[in-house]
Amino acid sequence: MTAGATPPAAQRTGRGCSASRVRTGPGRVPAATRRSRGRGGTVLFEVPFSSAMSDADLAVLARVLDVSTHMRQKLRPDPNSPGVARLDHFSGLFLERGDEHGRWLLQARTWGNPAPRSVHEWYVLAAQAARQLDARVKLPARLPDVQPATTDRPVGRAANKRLASIRRRLAGLA
Image (cartoon, rainbow, N blue to C red):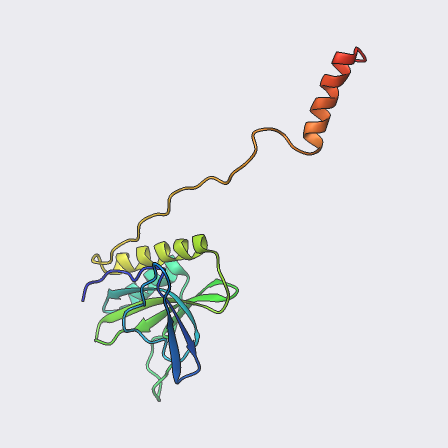
């Protein structure tokens, strides 16, 4: 299994513990065979990586992603994620244990509708953090820097003030 990242277009929705649906549309690919483990939300992206998850590795994740972790074994099996970072009011980045020993997964889930640009920035940040722990992680391509369409001429009061001074000069009032 390669240590690449699942594209951000992959989304999954889980409702409750028993049902989960995979949303696919034009240009969307379903996420790998990863389950949301009944936690709900829509999976935005997944970044798999390998690590022994030592205290130094946990410190890297805490520093780069601001992940709160609780890795110590409990008396009973704990279904909670061993780490979580809040991305926005409705989204979070979850550290999940992989299917094999030493395999981990950073999974972003949302219960809202974040902007695609924000999702891509979170994806790049998570992949960079995972790459610090596992050099085989592939970084996603950067989005092209698109400038918003703006007008070249002043609008509103600034335009009226400028035109008013030109009008006064032409009329000989200034």
